[in-house]
Image (cartoon, rainbow, N blue to C red):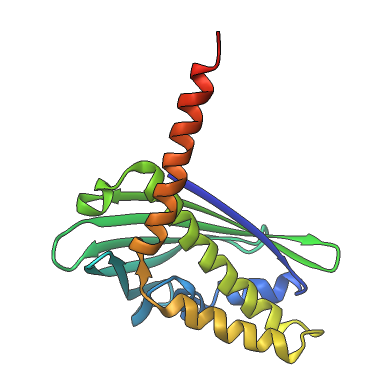
Length: 200
């Protein structure tokens, strides 16, 4: 499953690059994630908490930084997560690329996500909608941090950065996100059903 997200910030490319290379600041932007160990300059361990209805899952996650292209301002974070009670796992490759735009920098994030075990048993539409919202929260947190560091940032930007990181730190609730995703899936189904029956 591939998820894409882009945003622009009034920051220099160098400032954005410095943030992406600071995994200690990037990992807390992942919803429900907490950095637990720095293994080396390019490897880390983290715990990620996810709530699916009444079930709370904790994933032990190994994160490595690969594919660093400083000239092209692109970096890849690979995450391999396993549920601590054996109820599934996930692998993700998160590629972040920077480009100059008038007045700032554009950040493009492409996440290639693979789920396994119990976590993968949800319908593809629901998983994609939920995962898309998780990636959006991750991007919002990075955006808020960069906006707060911009030279022209006001105090409001700093407050927004703190709020975004606090929001990202909360465990992800698949129930609340899943209800919205399920409703959208049902709506798409009936639209397709009635739309198809109206054709001669």
